[in-house]
Structures are given as C-alpha cells and as structure tokens.
Image 1 (cartoon, rainbow, N blue to C red):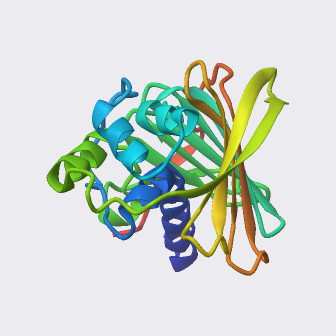
Image 2: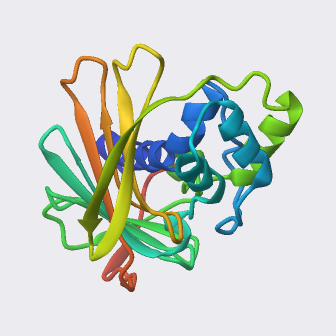
Length: 237
C-alpha cells in the first residue's frame, strides 16, 4: 500500500474521532477519553447534568449534554463539508461504517475488517489490523462521568454560549445553541438537536478568524453497509 493510502486512512480516523469528541472537548479542554472504549448510547447522566449546570448552562443545553445520543451507534448518515470538500459517512448501528469522499475514495469497516478503495479504482484493498488503520469508537460518556466525579465539577470551565432559536431539519423541530471555545467568543460550535431524544442533526464549527467552517449534518435513515467486491489483500505492513 502506498503512503498516500496510509495518509487518507489516518485523516478519516482523526476526523471521526474529532466529531465524536467535540462535545467532550468543550468541558474537558485538553483532556482525552480512552481511545479503546466503547459504550452504548447513554441514558441521561446526572453527573454531567450537574457539571453543566455548575458551568452555567441552561436546562435545554445541559439536558442535551447529559443525554446526547451517539449517532455512530445508530443507523445514520453524516455529511461533512469543509473547505469546499464534502465527505459522507454511513453507520448501520451494528459497528459497521462506510466512508465516501467526493473524489471517489471509499473506506468500509465491516465485521471488524477494514477495506479501502482508491478514487478511480475498481478493486478494494483489505487493510491489515494495524495501528495505522485503527477504527474509531463513539462518544465515551463513562470517561466524561469519571472526569467530573474526580473533579466534583469544581474545575469545570464556565460555558459561554448563545441560544440560536428553532428551525426544521430532516422533518424534525430542532433547537440550536452556539457554544464558544472561551469567553472571547472568537471560535465555537453550533449544535442543533431534538429536545425529545437529544439526537444531533447539525453541528457547525467556525474557527477564531471566521475563515474555516466545518458543517456536519446528520440524518437517521436506515443504512445497509455493502460488502466490498472484488477484494485483494494489502501489501501494507
């Protein structure tokens, strides 16, 4: 396998991990959750609810943080647009996923095996189980809870946010908040979610200079992950 393939796979993994950890980042700063953890979509967490309240969040925002549903463990589709490029990621809710770039590159994770299709190619490459192609996991609420328990919520950074109102997305009535990285309000992320089930339908991150925006939209239609074919083994070691 070429170096280009290694880089492409790494970018996809990093991107999904960043999206999955976006909410945790607002509370924990530079703290990181364990990379190998995997939990089901959580019930509302009283620990996180309490920490959010102490950080100045209102009822709707804190209920969202405490009960956010992990879309990577549901049948869902994520469309990511950034820098004029678009990427789609499909999840079937069974641990399988399918990534498609606008240029035609694809990655499928099926039954714990990973497959790569280079743009313009017709033959899939089965990737070895190495650190270079580790599959990302979803949002780890248990790690968040443990962090809040250890700090008792005392060191939680105060939230700086703005309520954005309501709109309709994918036939759902959603509410929006923009949560800023710090009190300067220079950079932040919009979260649009359904209050009934705490499912996210859109996230929009804007950097400090308002130059770079990453727009993530999520729908919850039924997803079937295809079986790659034809397939050859990778020469990546």
